[in-house]
Length: 355
Image (cartoon, rainbow, N blue to C red):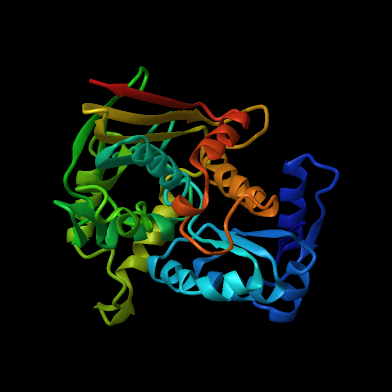
């Protein structure tokens, strides 16, 4: 079942699934009784809606006795969902928030690498969604919601530094260069929020360093940092010649209007875990360079977000995840997760080396 408040969108999504068992239904996610009834028809539910309703949906899933995972988007909401652990255990269901790409897929991959080490030391996560043919000064196209994009650029970043969780790292700084195979070449990566999800707390005391950066074409970070420093990402309304306006509302409107939408995209993932194995330095690297799929009509970002979330949803329905409200890096078997990712044609490469 695919449900949406707009039945036309539900029908469109059902058509993309290319499965006779897939049915479309109109459903208002704020209609408690209707959602509860729909959940009771399913073994597991994937929430691909605004993070603002995820906590309510998780509570309804527990009441319905149905497994639930969502695509997250807000650390506070995720923390509140995880507080439902005992209730979820009592109901015999799994609640796994913040799935998708990053946050999402990178968490089980990072945990898989940490578990390969006798003494894990650091985790570096680098992820980006890019246009195959960039244009303009920003060299960017919208591959997901503009609201989510600005959240990543404006909110404090969370990391582990020198064995301690640091939750006030500035976004859009600490730019580094990364090399990828042609035609990509040299790209940049910089601090953004959200991508580490629950990993800092999960790995506190296990690694000394953990951070997350977003990958973009060179020059993007400097341009967006200038916009940030001008205050154009601020929510608070200001007086602009006698009119109260939110700078962020204006910025989001202009980005939505002027930055390209759609088109062929690329998703880049590089997760590197360093540590010691059998007394020698070791590194586990997980890398994916995924392009839009012309045959299926799915963009790389669609694949990168939907496939990991749906894999976890299927794992829950099959009884392969523990009961309770649990971070995905603790709930999902890394080997099984990687098998499922590769089985869907995602070009994930896994490399483990010892020095």
